[in-house]
Image 1 (tube, rainbow, N blue to C red):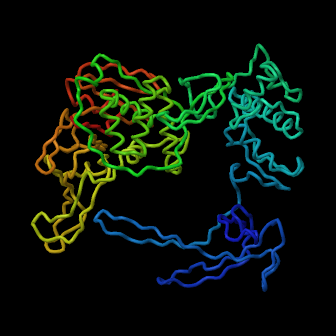
Image 2: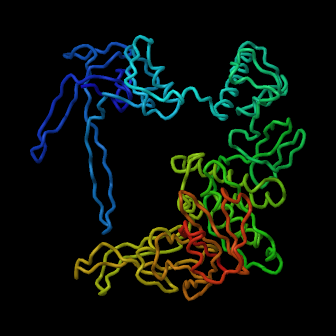
Length: 554
């Protein structure tokens, strides 16, 4: 049976991920329930880079041992369960996708093009062949997919590659003009075109992608997704400045000028809790008539758009107070965010720039969760930017009948109260209770996890996905009691999700609702009028549902 090895077990022995082989034999044992268990699989490698010889085995036959993976499962009753899975990591290899075939060459290449969706798939499958004689196409295919003309984006990609190829050749030959420098694709291409002229076309460029005055070469000004629509201090020979609110780098734009752009800090300040002074609303508050603004959607940024746009308009309401509050709440993300907001108001950056800066900072911190250009969730972003050093809530298990429960107190160090409200049983100003799956060892009654507020953070976010209980309902104001001190929180924003897209509504102190959709309305927030019925905030347009509510301390 043909198989493909799926893990790099021993690269020096050609036992590598993607290596093809055929089954030669195996050793098995009997499990605890009488079942047959595969212990060792012997496979013969097909066309390995070098000959492999194990003592006592034929040439190119290698042993594959089973591997084990242990998963810790947290059950609804708060107990845990370890599950261990053991297997030999191979897959049947009767056929493979075009993606899996990349990098392979086949003397006999049998392909099925009927279900290939793009011309790239056609190319990948057919180019695995060593010769035309060794290629067999199983059935018919749609010729339009390879004869209908390339898309504009693909033509642009090919044009970029042609210029980069020429730049690389000239650099290798020592003939590249000294002014052609850059660490990003667009920067480098623009510098080269400034030297050669915008109408210059290398002689080797195919006629299908050659550009001219009637079909110009349109290169995006964005430097590979770093910043879009820069609104910075663009000056000739701009120096690096030490007092910029955000650490900066100097880069060359396509226009030959130098601009300051955000740089990810190499140091990470530890979060610290700071109690900002009571703000003077009369002196620093934003006028009620000022129109809120948002960010323009770009590269699957809707989750970031909602958070940045909402937090900016909250910050804008009292910049001095919220700059201090954000820094004290989370110095790793909210602090730089507030500095970016201030730089935006000084004309150094656009709000889109601040969003991209925070997006890259999150990507730097958790690349597996915040991949650039990929979708993420609002909850994931808030879990990072609202993380605190000091606890916001504490929780402990209790028996409704008063029996002693030996469970330790847990602390929630985050201003996002996530994943508990849907199970809420009752709530008061001091805390709330949720139903648990665990049972009391004395009376066999379901236990309750009781949450208590232990601090008054300047901002609270609630995950209200699918809520219908008292705690999950939207309200204009809510009270929180900590050690006898009662403070009021006011609803300032609601984030929605629907149709794989996030939007948000910002509520001003005067009670006006402004809706933001970075994809639909761009940077403009739409005025929905005075908030009359709080229930109207549960959906923005009938197709989306509220998932997060944001409250600020008054």
